[in-house]
Length: 244
Image (cartoon, rainbow, N blue to C red; front, side, top):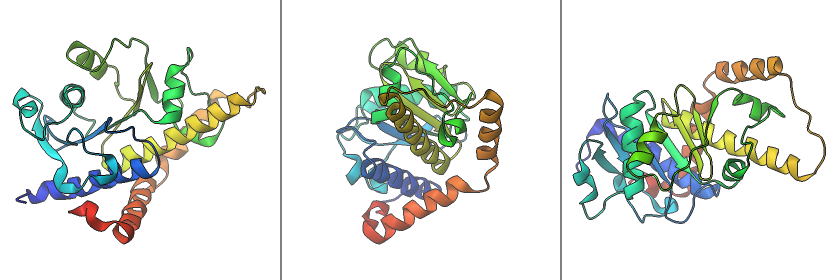
């Protein structure tokens, strides 16, 4: 396949993210979608084709599409229509968000179904996201047209958009950072939902401690890159076909 060399590394890394989302059960059937910007303005991006299971995605499967070209939906391997609409709007309106991961992962989606969808700082993973989560409380159907445009403006400077009645969306400057945030947000939600299920009082940290811990996470040197490198190493040993 004649893939521009500057896109090949993005393809391989995004394919790794898909495979690991499947391994960690953060996928849903043939739904959900990941993308990464392939141009400086974000209007060209790589995204998964409709109907391809996350566990089978290879680097060469990813589609290079343009947010300004609805013809992207006319190709035989077109992306899901909601995926193209939502990611086009996000990449256009949030160009700093180079990688965008959207899933209906179990525990983040449970949190998105609660009347109060805030994630309290009860342990250090949840403190990582203290004051770093935008909550969408205006769900208005599938992510098409006006709904995609509305959602795209909610993220602001935060890495997590918890989509009420829907799921979660993560945005980051790199694939490694986005996947690391997705992984740890899901873990934090799992801990919180499990703690709620005990019916016992929660040990909630103060705002000052939560902010301090969030800063420590942000200052942790190279954590996301090392995490993602380890994930790629496992795939290279066990299912290297994701690179094809």
